[in-house]
Length: 252
Length: 304
Ligand SMILES: Cc1cc2nc3c(=O)[nH]c(=O)nc-3n(C[C@H](O)[C@H](O)[C@H](O)COP(=O)(O)OP(=O)(O)OC[C@H]3O[C@@H](n4cnc5c(N)ncnc54)[C@H](O)[C@@H]3O)c2cc1C
Ligand SMILES: Nc1ncnc2c1ncn2[C@@H]1O[C@H](COP(=O)(O)O)[C@@H](O)[C@H]1O
Image: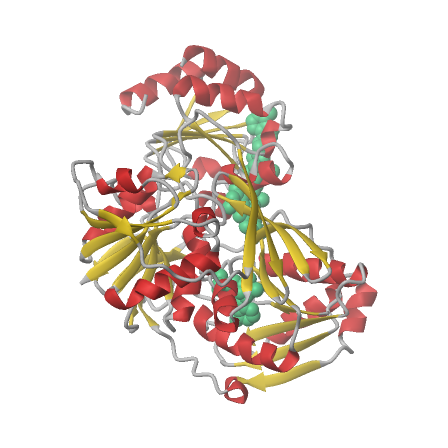
């Protein structure tokens, strides 16, 4: 079974995003970019399925600027066998909406015929938490979102999902889509030899036109502003002082 | 304009608070029909601002499975300009699927409704707020409940079954593992007490729980505490966990990473107890207490 993993190049999770003064977006010049952390978890899960002999091939796909090729190399250094880059923009600030991403991924899936797709639960830049669900809808496949445990038995998938209040177990028949949550696994670091090897793995480049997909956004971003900030308060010296302050603030 | 609102309900019952807050948001857009999967229809019918309640049964819909719920909503979608739900794990599972089937873009985590097509939503872990205008025929959105007051009781809306829809049978529900608790719900509690990696172990989390119980508070946690197994996953507060905005948020042994702040920085009053005086959490805390939580928290619990 082939496993497909969509990976997104995003602002590094350690960097605090800065809003541009003119309200046109977030300033990404000279900002460290990395693989979306949830996608590292997704790649790790796919590679583990290959190591268990369940997956035969792991294909990573990214949609974005040319530099997303670096993100795909990282995925291949972690163990993905090959990669597809759909080059849709020259500007890192142009975000492709989940609906368009899902349509492009559907195009890839129609051609590649994977048995399983493992995406991240959420991209930490747009915080949409939507692409996996939208892709499942377009394909007419079952979806197991927010997965914290995955077992493949023949063509049945058993997934434990993180839900409000606790956990949920569901089963699905393949092909299907999983979105990875934080507790699914702890992703490996790519070793230097594997980083070198990844440079020689195949990376195919495509465009949106190759899949006949219109990526015009449905949501126009009218403006982007910084949220109302919070200022640091005071330090108190004791529990008694803290309690007095909380009573004065009428929250106790 | 007519709004279809997906209630936060399942076979076990209704989350009245989340549903009532979403009803407040939805009422500004038009007449609200509420779809109640599983239990809770009578309770929803009593909430002001609801014009009609539709019920849906069946194993899949009553357990929040995306495929049958999306099929059900799609069957009804033509009658509505907006499809709305509170931003819960259930709605985040279902509404993007609905949106894709309608060939529209979902608008997640709305914090303000400007007009019928224009909404505000946080991005980049809440470090930026976007105003987005939708060009789609049907608007499919989830709303952050903290941003809207809960609608009051005082209504008797009619209740009837939703039109039948075939379950695509792409997935099957096996079991839910939900902890029984008398504590208030994390996202609607007036006070939240959260513990981080500094708590050190699952046993030590009793310190957090005892303080919370004494205050009638809900218990939260940082990702580090959940990953380490100190606390269950559904206690995680943050960018990728629950977003809370209580009157009082108390952070114990939490450093204040961007991702954690994203889930609690709209709280009215924030208290931080941490032994590191430079911990970033103090930059958002109204009241900070520097010191060892293992001596401070028992003292606080006995005096509160
Ligand atoms: C994709 C992604 C998503 C994430 N989502 C979330 C999220 O939703 N929510 C979230 O919380 N995090 C999230 N994180 C993780 C986040 O980046 C931080 O790693 C996490 O919040 C740190 O948790 P912490 O503050 O408990 O631990 P630490 O950063 O280790 O802080 C522990 C604190 O405890 C203090 N301490 C230790 N011992 C004591 C003591 N005896 N007395 C007093 N103080 C003490 C220390 O001084 C320190 O400040 C996410 C990360 C990623 C990459
Ligand atoms: N541009 C993209 N390229 C590749 N994968 C993507 C892209 N956007 C989203 N994804 C996938 O979809 C997941 C959820 O993203 P989102 O719905 O944008 O929050 C991510 O974790 C990725 O697995």
